[in-house]
Image (cartoon, rainbow, N blue to C red; front, side, top):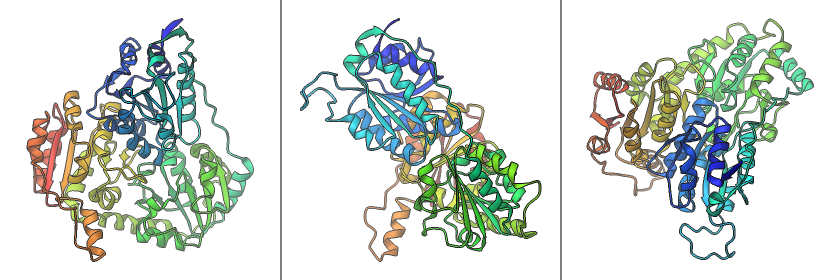
Length: 525
């Protein structure tokens, strides 16, 4: 069938189940836009390409499916690059489809609008794969390759660059069906060795990362079988119900977590990098023999060398362990796991005491299945990550590792569109929201009930504290805050200023029932 390049893009995306994309039309990508509606794809307009990619990231995190964004060439792609870097850091499947410079142009350029020396090369240094296609016929193949890569092994963001002359050309093109990805079974000998080590543990403990989000049931069953306390990373939050009696909450940086690891004899690590961005104060202490499960074989020996390494899907591996460990715990010390879990939960409750009335109201308002999209802000990494309990997978979104500011608002928009019937809340600081503040207008245009909580400490509080700890005079960290209420209303949102627990809880309930987003400004926190 004869199709233009733009038509091939739209139909290839639709063939892979894409029903929603974020993007901004531009001179060079209009041929894609001309065919989105006919392909059954809904388009959502952000106010900046970074917002488009962050929203696609939020969609991907809550659904487990790739999020897709579309940009024009040059600066639009580079605007999205920060968000793609965050997706790479957190192993999130985001696909960026962009226009690019013509297929045939002088190597040193001619001064085209949006001309970039090497767009694919620039993105190749940021995403998993950056691919510049050379013909209309290659477009559906490139899309199929991207989806096959994103939905097998460790997910990473992908970029497809399509020269704008190729988008306009026509050719006879077949659209391949999605590739059925078989999930391989983990190695049986590795599972045998892991099960033997775990079954004989007297003081086991479990750390679960983002790779455990698709294995919640098996994770709980293994923890119960071992009678082991479970701690999750920020990206693993929700993979283990934080009301479970074995839950020690979230955050590997907490001192009691290091004490637990030091006291344990066997540590099971599921889908976690054990990265410095998770640990903050240095690597985990020596002591336990380690079993690691990870879909990425290279990660199995990074940051901590295990005694037993199991490469493969977390759910398959945990179920394989469950069948090998036996029906009862091994030699676990009676009562130990419950004592540790209670101690760790107490520590988590102490986290964020500075914002206790804010965080406790957020937890209560979200209920068991609501989604909290946090930003890289003090109230999140010191407070919400540990204090606001989550109970189901994919219910806490946070930019770990790369640590971008401005993530929370557009990610919350993406999450809300993915799960329109769930309560979704964005939690940001006054510094971070300024990075993506225009996305309030995007959310208002969508008419979504989205509370956007801004905890205002009049600047970059974390960096202010670090400067003072060094003995430096604070420089460039104090910000005269804008009138957030007026700004939000000017962008089409509701807005309210609150200073106490009762007013805050009422504001959240009203926001969840509103016909548009509501910015809730909390000053002096």
